[in-house]
Length: 142
Image (cartoon, rainbow, N blue to C red):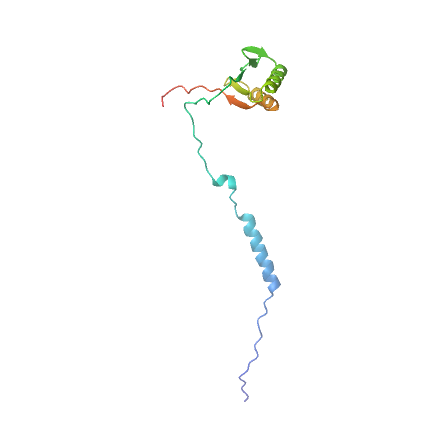
């Protein structure tokens, strides 16, 4: 009898390429199924509300544009005007005074599109500032 102390062992064959393929598939699966947090949802803000609006300091009287809820929509110094006339008046006033302040007084039922048109006209005329009139809320006191 012949006993040998050395047994020849076969080394297990591990195919590295197949393991890398499997790991890549798992990695891609995890990347696709993981939900990512967006930067704008990380910071939650509660903006303050004002029950009493405080007027800012104004050196010059602003140009007041009133927007009604029905036609004619635009009023400049209590005179009804068309949109084209309003644009021309804003441009000429802004050329005379580059620091011109415009205040918009819009009815709460005024069409939002008309308010947007006035804001666009003021920006195109390059006025110095744009403000809005508001009312105090009715009901309970502060």
